[in-house]
Image 1: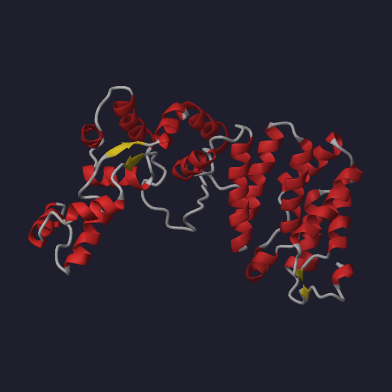
Image 2: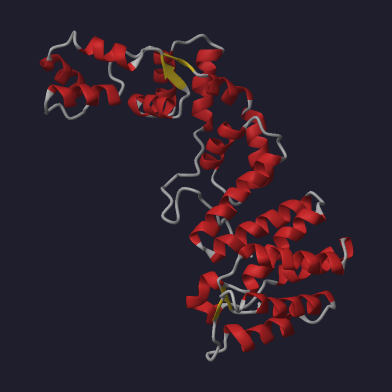
Length: 325
């Protein structure tokens, strides 16, 4: 179902940047530790961490500011007043000192200085930094226990910092849901199937068959009616054997009637605008699975009649045809 080492990104569709999965956690933590526990000032902590990890001090400071680990006490209006004390030549020297473009009118020069936080800096640790420090172990435990095989830590860390007040059990579930939503918005069949499968495994490990059933059926319906991969339909092999096995497992845990009634609810939730395999046909296939019909016979029949059928006419849903499918 999942490729080895496959990871999903909320930010990148492909071409994930080099070292993207290398966590910034440790040097962020070390910086906060120096200020919070060792009493270092912001500048010396930035300098110490930058030297330790061979980072640019300016890049590290920018990262801490952009991610609101440190905040500036000086208000924007106060910085503008401060800049009035400098002549244009002095302002250009400040820009050149930091390797920035120094040409242009004074207004643009001032904007460049403000944007790059070059004067009037009076930084302090934010409450976010304190949360970051206190929640390090919890954050790493959640990621390592549930998410590390398939997701990038950098993105999870950003999500966690915005959602740390939530109950621990909800955090990984809602994070996976974000990936499922992204796959749905992009109509990406592979990512949808893979992320729903990750959710299936999560609920299987948690011994929650009711919630597990929801995602097994979502995976089943989308693989049965793969409307997001019509251009490569002939390569589609139906639903994977893992889904077949899980449906039989859930029949033992729940019941055939519960599975079938939920099938209709899940199918309707997709609001399919095109039909490759009709809903009723999906019901018949589901019954075959629950009656333990051979998996390979089921999928080969689907391939012959639908996915590999050159004469197949894909139906578009209209108000007239709505109840037929």
